[in-house]
Each structure stands twice: as C-alpha cells, then as structure tokens.
Amino acid sequence: MPSLFAPYEWFARWCVERVFGLDHATRLGSSIEFFLYDVPKVLTLLLAVSFLVGTLQTWLQPEAVRRILGGRRLFFGNVAAAGIGIFTPFCSCSAVPLFIGFLKGGVPLGVTFSYLISAPMVNEVAVALLWGLFGWRIALTYIGFGVALAIA
Image 1 (cartoon, rainbow, N blue to C red):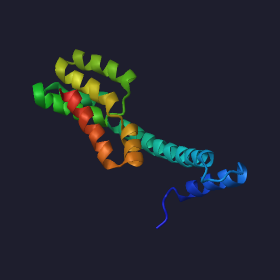
Image 2 (image 1 turned 90 degrees about the vertical axis):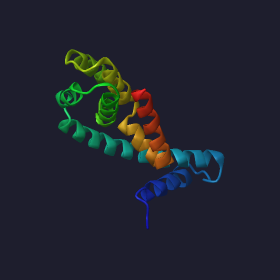
Image 3 (image 1 turned 135 degrees about the vertical axis):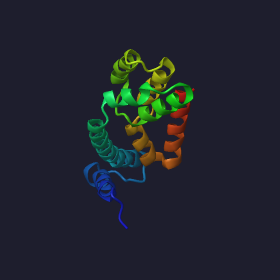
Image 4 (image 1 turned 180 degrees about the vertical axis):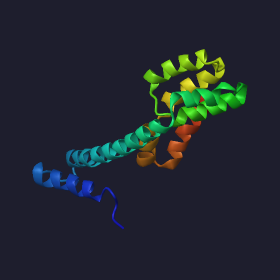
C-alpha cells in the first residue's frame, strides 16, 4: 500500500539526482533528499493540525472554559484545568490574558496556574509533529510529562 507521502519521496529523489546531479547515497545527497522529503511532510502536518485547532477554537470559547473551572477546587480543579489547557488552542501570549481573566472570574490561583502551564506547554502542533516523526509513545510521554508538571 503506497504511503501518503510517497510523492514527496519521489520528488526529493528526483531533485537530488536530476536537478542537483548528486548521488543520493552520498552524505550531501542524502542530506538534501532528507530535507526535501521532510519539509513538505512537516508543513502538511502543520497545516492539517492548524486547521483542526482553528476549528476547535470556534467551539471552545474562553468564557466556557471559565465556567467549567469556576466551581472546581484543589486536585480535581488542577486536573480539569490541565486537561482543558491541552485542548485549548492558545499559545502563551493568549494564555496569560486568560489567566488574568480566570483570576478575576473567581477561579482559584492553583487551578489557573495548572491551565497557564499546560495550555502553551502541551501544544497540539508539537503533539502531532512528535507523533508523526517519533511515534505515539514519544507523543504520549510528552503529553504525560506536560500534564503532570501542570498539575504539580
């Protein structure tokens, strides 16, 4: 069964051999082939994940997150905040204003810190790239450590 990225592999090999006139078995040739093969693959994954995150962002508004976290306390609030932080497509530049809004909305400080840590740390794009490049074990390890740190 052909891979989704088979055209990228063909294009990379073709460029190395025909355009640059290099043997793909040499260090330079294999390096250029690797670059030409992986850059479009990573960009494709990045575009797909960005589209999914943008779609998710239309459904999960900051006000809804504030309502969910408002009545939580201590450990369960931290777990909920870290979990919500994973699935919200906010970087650190938008997580800080949300953090302040959560505090003004009455969400406990520890719970808001769990959100503030997990939102930019466990990034959807990074998870997708880790999964695609290194496999599900590395991606889940990344998520596990990020969530554990946010809860702690």
